[in-house]
Image 1: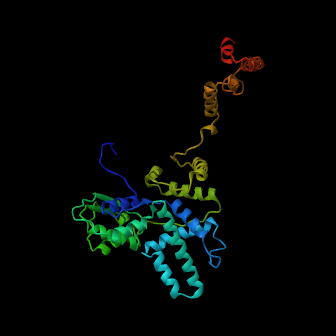
Image 2 (image 1 turned 60 degrees about the vertical axis):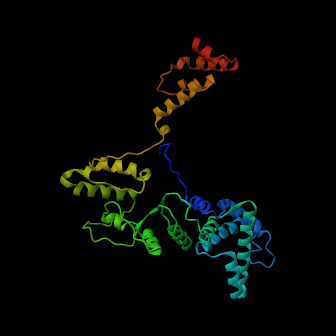
Length: 340
């Protein structure tokens, strides 16, 4: 994106914070995942001995699970107070767990607030109860969605719908359908949609494309490769095997077998495979030579005597190595090497 373009790229949490500031909701700084987990860890230290989580209060695994639990509950527009009220109506065993969850959750939010931080769902909640002035001009926004929506998200989008703003949302068909139904709006479709795209990431099933499919169980990978290449050789249109493609799980394992079997069966194959430079003897020698020439240690050029690519005279090898060692000790190795 050009540097002079007046466009700001934001993740969803920071977009919510921006709208909260424009709506004069006085949002705090956005807390990170690590902040929330740390606040939960501090809150767990204050648990009473009768809490179901007292025995595991010091374990990071509990803290991580509570982070996920609290965020999921918030996505369904639940709060510590709601959970605490539910605990009263539950059985003693479940009620004790819910009461402890509410206690930890509320204490963690309070600890974050003491440091001027809050979570994304808290900023959304502030937006939902605010009534922005009609004079406020909100940012023109294009939002790309690729994850399932929660009731909290839908409530925030419904709040945005009533603002004086140009807010465009783009995403997969299924997500846009849920969002358009919740907001009572009609989505617009752009571009030409093929059958493949229409069925992609959906539960829709396309009609039979008329493609012949065969299932073959091979004893090993080599037998699998040979069977596939024989199919290419026998069924390639007009004998042109380059019009047929092979899909393999990974070329690290399949690549060498495809090349060997193709050569044996006479099937021309074209594919690209990556490999480390040092697996090739010449390239390995070249890299080592460049490193030697770049080094401050003159002894590094002894590679010249070890590789057959340089054809270094065997009768001069000992004299050359002694000269390198002497030059290294006297700190004038490169000059001595030049004179030698």
